[in-house]
Image (cartoon, rainbow, N blue to C red):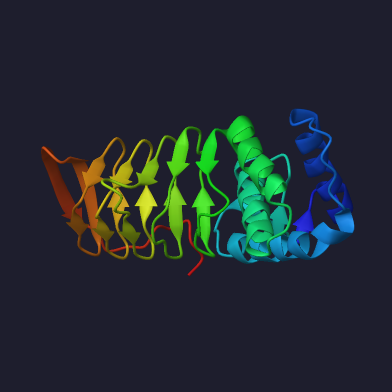
Length: 217
């Protein structure tokens, strides 16, 4: 994977942001971070390899630009989640989570298990809570995924949430579904290959055949 700065510079860059924004004198030993950091980059590379977008490739090779907001936001999630999974420096997980909120307005807690393949598209104001997620998830700005009455949604593969769409509660979203902009679905099933429009009081759906062309499948 091409990276806009080398790996050590990337780690130093991220830790510098953490230390500058959260100056509590906590120290993190880079040697103890390296395994999780390297795994985060491998997860990132695999995820990016499925995205059919010119900014994710250079000369046919996966590309990560630390100054590309969507890409860096996804990296911050992978890094915080990998550290959490490896039980390394939970305070750093918390800070990376907060850093993502501060820089990009993305609220995705480090404990959340996002799929191996997902895409953030300028996701300002997006909140992703607990739920069951599957590969090829696309989330745009202002989206929400979370609980209603302590029940969380289940999303199939190839689900796309367009700007300001929300999935809440006991929802089962089938494979290859989309939620239109400004739509809201609560405690409802959506069969596979449908586009959902509207809200619980006034909604309709249209059949959908083709997979989102952002994915290289």
